[in-house]
Amino acid sequence: MIVKNVKIYTMNDAAEVIEHGYVKITGGKFTEVGSGEPSFDDKDIIDGEGMALYPGFIDAHTHLGLTSSGVGIEGEDLNEEFDPCTPQLRIIDGINPIDYSFEQARKAGVTSVLVSPGSTNPIAGQIYAIKTAGKRIDKMIIRNVGMKFSMGENPKLTYMDKDDSPCTRMAVASTIREALFKAVRYNSDIDAAESEEDLPDYDIKSEALLPVLHREVTAHFHCHRADDIFTAVRIANEFNLDYTLVHCTDGHLIADELAEENTTCIVGPVICDRCKPEMANLTPENAAALTRNGIDTAICTDHSEVPIEYLPLSVGIAVKNGLSFYNGLRAVTEIPAKIGRIFDRTGSIEVGKDADFTLFEGNPFEVFSSPSLVSINGSIVYRNTGE
Image (cartoon, rainbow, N blue to C red; front, side, top):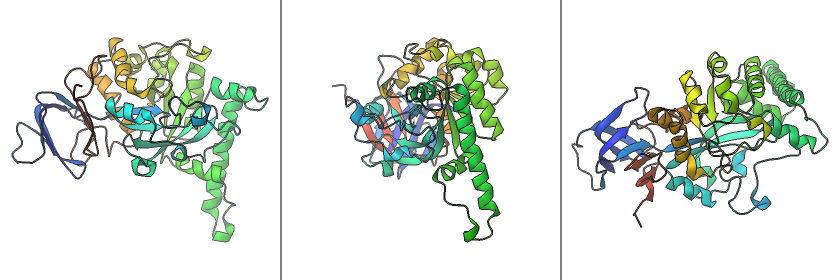
């Protein structure tokens, strides 16, 4: 397949924009990205008619498929609220790919998402990057990319209602530290073992945390309030974790301090109210403030808190409040791909990467805009017929 006569926002590290370009797709991958007219024929040619071609959008923090639209508690599979430490949980065992929200994601140009467990547990489980097209989750997975940690009100209130620990911020942090220290000891015992008989007894929780300690996956810290953000940073630094700050609602108040940490942030949801005390300082200017301070910032919906189809609109609101258009694009392409450790596969238009892209006639972040075409792995998953 060839798509020609398009303005290509490559979102590569060189920030290249090709004014009049084309892409060639073979076997689900970009095999050529160029300017001008393609010099070869293909029976499957799409004339973009001057539209803009972008990488497929990526939502860096969702619960897509873990909460089924219009179902209620029977379709809620994002929080295991009876043990505050559950790193062994894999969200792919709870995702329903047939949920209507996947179709809504594709129609909005969202081709990949990072799906996370909920935030009731200080350590909630494993995060996976998946494509938004498919019937079977095993074929949609890009890879395991992270571990979910939660600070603040959500774990506090969950276990306070159960008359159990943790019910203070101190205990939340302590729960996380204890699990990480156990995993460190477990790892040391494995390294010290001289034979299989010397290996420690299998510990599913510590085993699940080893990739976090080895920096093979990213620690995603749910945190809103400034003190919770700094507690997340403190713990991450204590254990030398590769980490990102999810929500980071007070980030605009402490952006200068966060800039010293060389961290990344996932801001959102943008379209919401101040629904709990720790979100009192919520502002749509957050993404712009963090970006001005040199912090790579992605924008998320936190679906189903905000439906996945409003990811482009969320970017539009951030752009309205000080974020540049190009940094808005980065916030749903390059940056979430890098945070999600999938930039080798998607997040930019480059030869060798998955052919995930979307075509827009107008500004993709305006409320009246819809993609004209969406492709995942080189297959057209949505075409706007105008009907």
